[in-house]
Length: 269
Image (cartoon, one colour):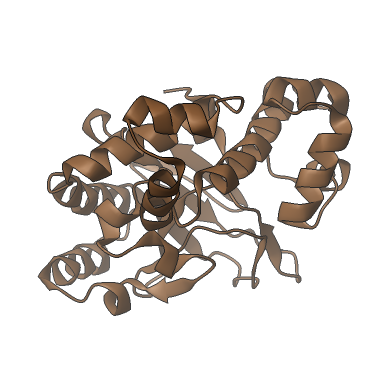
């Protein structure tokens, strides 16, 4: 298997910077290749505030909605190539044209969400492409057309979600005030564009910041240092949130986590 002319073999996972004009809405594109001896148990995908459009092998694309709890993915056959595009928090309604709350904790075929002509064009491009790099570009073209039709409110809310993503200590009340909105209006708007309210998104992104802090510290890192870097009051606060959202303790998850997952949050590009 090649990806843009570069030979790849499983197990493999990599996140790629999106085209510059997509970065407000697209976190990354990514490729995964299942190794010759995959783990025979489901994999845990913990919440990251994002929505992914995913293509597994030659199957039709499906949408992995914004997760509020850990999702479990069944093992795939050796050599399976998975290609995806990850939408930033707040971008789901713009890209998929339905309220994001309808997708929360769901996995659905794209055609069942939006069966219009744009999907036919995307399906044709994906079927014709074998190289994951070509598939990633097809997914970016599809996203670019959708972003070009974003409403002013949706653009505002993508920026608001980005503020919560960047700053885990940001006050939700302060964010609402900056927008000239009440907190109830902000909550409704976040449900529609993110899939959950701003306080839930903030908890999820603080957890993701903890993973980023552990990654940047080049494990093993002291959990107390990770907690403070991520914006938690202390390690106990991080442990409580981790358990409530993921079902894992931080130590248990970090011991087995693929730290290549989530590098988009480091803003390396």
